[in-house]
Image (cartoon, rainbow, N blue to C red; front, side, top):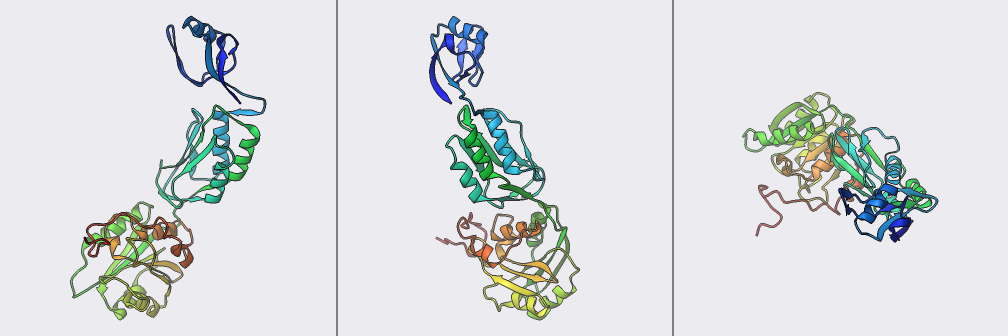
Length: 330
């Protein structure tokens, strides 16, 4: 593509780079100039105009943006492309879920040509109907076809929507000193589930003791996910909640996570279904590490110890001022 000033008399078929006022109106940038436009520019007293002129093999900005966006989603369900314009295509989710992003593929596509850009939300971002998950922008008026082909190949299938695959969950809370649990824990849990279309199928509250919690787990109806919210935080693999999971026949796979708030989470399985020991901060609706685990599991994305251990970068989340032990009490 060639870019720069050109005599108005010779500018037919080029792309106007900057909007220009002319008698009776305004020619907008991006317009492919025709003889009538040249006459209007001349009438405005202009002898030359800044334009872009495509070379053989170049692909115009809108066509290039659309081709790259189509390559990104690769026909995957759950994502839709907005109409293309000014070299941009926005990509939106069509329903709840999380977004799988191949970061290496995005980086590779962005490295092909500075005029070819892709921006996305963070990996595994929770989305709802209409959430924008990515935008493709061709910065110049056109891009070389060979460069576009390389970018499309690098980015192929790099975006995918993972919808919820579970229908429901059970929540068992433990209490200290015989007091009933405050309703905010159950309410916050219901809200988290509802955002993904899941329902809370069962709720129980029992004393914070291994036998009582183990019995409550065993008595709970089958559900897609098991959640435990303890009256006293889980701070050791042998603490009450992990011990109760094992006593009830479940497995504890990992304790703790490098995300704050959310450090005191544990992960396991019960009756073949995922189990999350929620940190105390899950009583607040504010984002915490448990959200990252719950959302992925609800959408059928496996989460193991290694996945949790890699959450530390970006894992310093906004403080929840109401939690009993804030990270910076000063």
